[in-house]
Length: 457
Ligand code: HEC
Ligand code: HEC
Image (tube, rainbow, N blue to C red; front, side):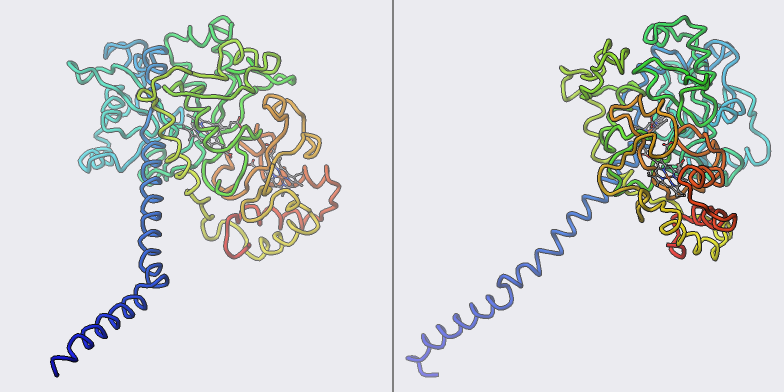
């Protein structure tokens, strides 16, 4: 190449190079490169958030041991007098009998094999302490004394105590965790009643100790009364307990309002329950609770504005809300086991659900609640207004129907008034004058048993 052409060739080379760069990394190219990494970062963030939320849901007490241990002294009741606490103590058998569950994955293999061969004393509270030390009691954390590692200092509770079960793979009450499942075996009232010192509860409710204990005994398995500590109403006008069933914490993505009576969104209710029911350390704001007529106890105790001056560094709840929300919205409603329903009948029931029975006017697939403000007056569903009137909107929330098969124990509707799904369908048939034939009613029940199922949808 002649030397005089060299600069031109060089210039051409540079220009071609620039064009090539522009073509391969121009707007489209740049986007092509950036999109996966940005999407990747978002996906990674979502995974991290869900992992963190799972951890919180299973193991975080939010500092509530200050209440369950220090104030109610439940840890002393667990230990029993023989181990330095009070009373008979809580053996593993007693713990399982009040519906507590044991996470088999937290047990070392040697202990699993000892259990299998009957070499573990399930009547001894010392065994319960050993399980607590292994972090194996679902939803309950024991805090041990520094100097004396076999003595409890306190005890705290987690979301998982009410909203998880186990699959009983090892034996009844012992198995792999099932996060989000409603623990309908759990007798929350009986557990709180173990407390040797309920004076804080008595004072809040303004009742003698014996009355508080009678109320706790009235709840029974699978129930809790989240509104008792707001309005002090322990019994319905018909004399039955005012407690409601523990609902599942799965299948909630796309559902606007939560709880039986639609108190708010997932992060609202999580903050509510972690602060006001579990007594963790955080902040909470809901001025609807300042209504002294509807919520005399809440208004008198400032529950509408909890810990307004708390140092953010000491807030154990608010920073946990994003992960908790992501986790709960990520847990799918579990599909029913094969053979647990009649698929052909369920397919016919699907047609009836959205056709003659008009169920899908409220229960809209695939969340089985309304997109929007998913609340109804008691009159619209043909039941009394007692529980609705204990919530700010005086209504019932259209219950999501995925995974009904996991919580047949305790019945259906907020208080379990309909013992079985056929009873629920009979209620609607009568109240809405649907005129369903016996065949149509049973097809509808098979459909409800099938949710969420690919085939029947
Ligand atoms: C002592 C038992 C108990 C504990 C502990 C508990 N819950 Fe609940 N949870 C309930 C009951 C009972 C309800 C129904 C309340 C109502 O409708 O009045 C409920 C309702 C819910 C709902 C609404 C579900 C739906 O169908 O919309 C969610 C979500 C939830 N809890 C999540 C949590 C989380 C997260 C925690 C821990 C921060 C927690 N719960 C701790 C008993 C409990
Ligand atoms: C007007 C709206 C509306 C219609 C129509 C309706 N539901 Fe419901 N459904 C609700 C509400 C609200 C609840 C919650 C009741 C409560 O909290 O006690 C509910 C609860 C349920 C439950 C209990 C869920 C649980 O977890 O306990 C089932 C099952 C159910 N409905 C099935 C049906 C079927 C089947 C039909 C049609 C025959 C139907 N619903 C029609 C609003 C409706």
